[in-house]
Image 1 (cartoon, rainbow, N blue to C red):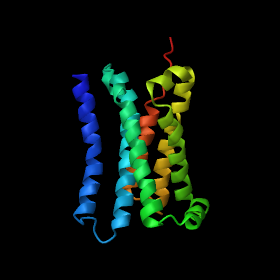
Image 2 (tube, rainbow, N blue to C red):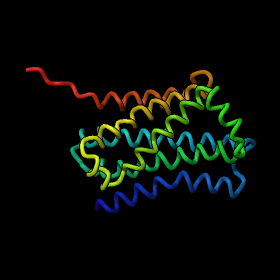
Image 3 (cartoon, rainbow, N blue to C red):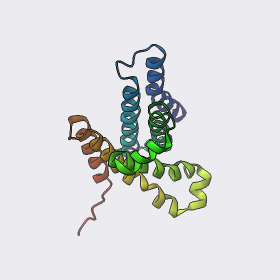
Image 4 (tube, helix red, strand yellow):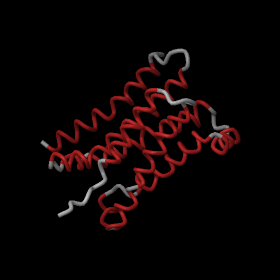
Length: 190
């Protein structure tokens, strides 16, 4: 049952990638294809951040451990879609114009914070294996709390990109705040 569950989560997680490939191959990206790919991959990054953050509260509220069994996979899909988002910007949009990219990272706060979020994902990906969990012991949990910072950075990236707060960025921000608040454990008083 659990292997079917994990396999199903993996297959479902690849659907956005297959959808964007379909749109590219069949010229279904609309009048601004680069913008469409960039927004599509960025939004799916936020979706997977929310899904990853939801796994621990789901385990706590349902007492089913299979939620945390897929958390690592969902976290790796965060990195996958975030990397596609970044590569769209670097390769397709700016065509490896490193001077312009560097200027954007330094001068535009939404690009800076988005890039910072991607950089913070790297140690999480590197240490996501079972061997690293064993090697890092209790420090592994401390390191992987970076996902909270990454979630906030991703939310800010979307809000600042929008110039003004639009509905979608606000919804993602509220969902992320809610999921982070679920992690606060209140001590029972006697």
